[in-house]
Image (cartoon, rainbow, N blue to C red; front, side, top):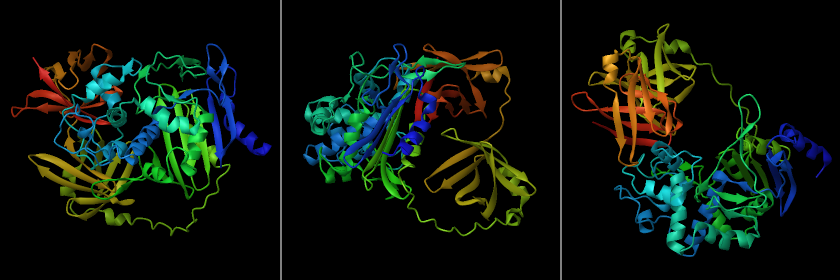
Length: 535
């Protein structure tokens, strides 16, 4: 490779090319060779061990494509079908009155709540020891799905733990044993395994770090004894062999790779870029198969361009690193943009006179703050006889399409429809990939006596855990025996925000006498997880 290119590559990693910081390892694959591989910074800070292409890294979610490929190979052997109901292989998973297929797990369209968030809510910290059995126990007590299978996409690590359990159910082997025999040995990936026992000693492994406020680094602890969604251990040398397998298959066949990279489909027939544990889309006009990963301080990215017979591998052991961004910076040194530079017709400026409303009285009713069940918050305001949509520091003028229905002037495929029901003002929002409903709320200024109605103990039967809400001074505080207290920020009377990443939004539940009887956690990869208020 020309010196000029290697200098440019090294220049991208100057910040980490030091003897006193963690860093990264990179690899560039072309045809059937690893044409460039290098380590920067330290694999272990305490002993000053440098990163090299042989350093073993924890892959985080880059692991998912290997779990998916194990399933693909079993499908070819006739041991299972991708459209099998998961209960056929996992009798322990509760019957939630919906058919969930193996394919739903692979495409993240199952509606099954995410394991890490469930565990965190239940009081298990992500740096605790987390075993496969522990996750299976939590999933076996689920009482509802986030949505009907196949209707939506929601990234679910739970699905990939369940796929590992399906491998075990069908073959009698652990995911580690099965992938070793059908993927890693055939490819000569001799330094690769699914790490399903956190106490196991692994030679040459990197440790993970997080930048500390004020300088320096902290250890970022990872004690996973679970595999499927995560936990593949490998290095750049081995991963290069996997990259080549996409365009020159040795483990499996071209047909298996085609199945692995087949885009997901929703019930309505629309396609999703997420295939089977891997993303299938394009970059600069070229087909690419890619995935990133993040656990503790590990950050990983592997991108393969099958038509160019090239791949770019970046693994880091420092938590503020952007491996995908760096991977594309390297790729840009090799890949020409083939997308036709279509001369876009100049976007016609929106005639904002059309946004001037004839019926201001009706529009005044729409003004105010709104919140959705999932915690999304918007505002609508009138200014100079025009209605504006405000969210997260951005404001867009709306055009009235018909009475009570508006579209965003700059993005006409985003629409809002206002209505009034039972005294509440509701707005439905549609955009190309989804829809949601929001309700108008008033800013909550409640007396201490009114706030006291929220106080109590709340119990979740699915996770067998409790949280308390207490009034301290004039503030409501969410408490749990495992975590520091978090101040509740009321949003209207029925929604609250917290500082916890695992349950940042709560929706209060009331009976027909308007008394609080519980709350739902509706946040991120979890919807409608119920906590009942107990005396």
